[in-house]
Length: 83
Image 1 (cartoon, one colour):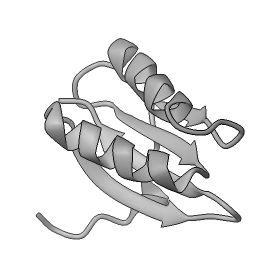
Image 2 (cartoon, rainbow, N blue to C red; image 1 turned 180 degrees about the horizontal axis):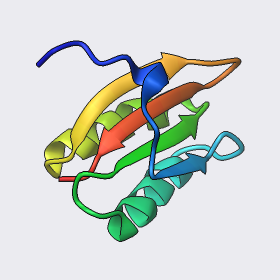
Image 3 (tube, rainbow, N blue to C red; image 1 turned 45 degrees about the horizontal axis):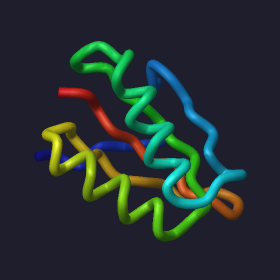
Image 4 (cartoon, one colour; image 1 turned 90 degrees about the vertical axis):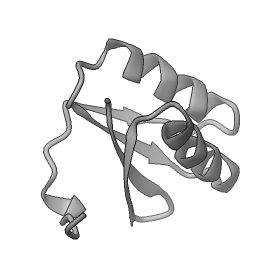
């Protein structure tokens, strides 16, 4: 797969979970992905390091395409495309 410039992705939805700790961000990711259409990309804002790892593992386990993340000011911008 070619490198993707994550900063240029236009997500279908941005989910801000910076104020919550695990399992909150993962639950919000599941909820948002449940209403996304196949091929749409979700952007999650996550500040909890445990949730970052869990969301990445969950997305790969269920078959979504984890594109990567970009560090921001105190949080990560994570990108996942629904399969």
